[in-house]
Length: 168
Image (cartoon, rainbow, N blue to C red):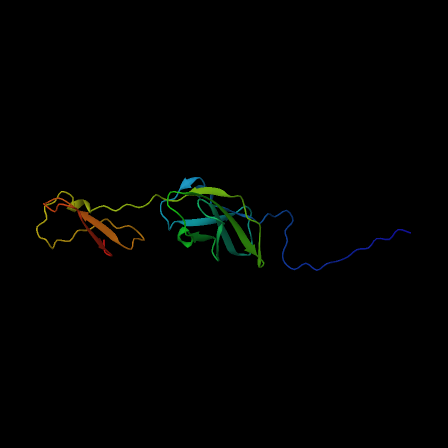
């Protein structure tokens, strides 16, 4: 006699037949050089990941030994959440968290970080005659800079004079 045994297992969570719940980095960021080290990385979902409560961004490549991850409750995060090098290409992929479970990472794409920022003397001071030894020198501001180094030469100084200031 042939007997069929059916085992019913409880299912905790939601399921939509055929629904893919992966996320990718926003397509317009893929293959680009970003404009700053604080630019946002934005995730998009391949299909609607209804109920996504977090997104995990994973970055690998460059001189990183192992991938860096950052989980955000938003579908975006700032590049400044990662310790990355300037002018370096990295691979980025994203995974949503749905129902408390991290889903699979989506398709990775490459981004290149911005070049090392450069500051210069403010244009209005270039070629100007200093009216006083106490006149301020002002550099163009660089986001995230913690100090500015000025090198002053000429005028009988002999060797260039270097001054570092926390102000631009």
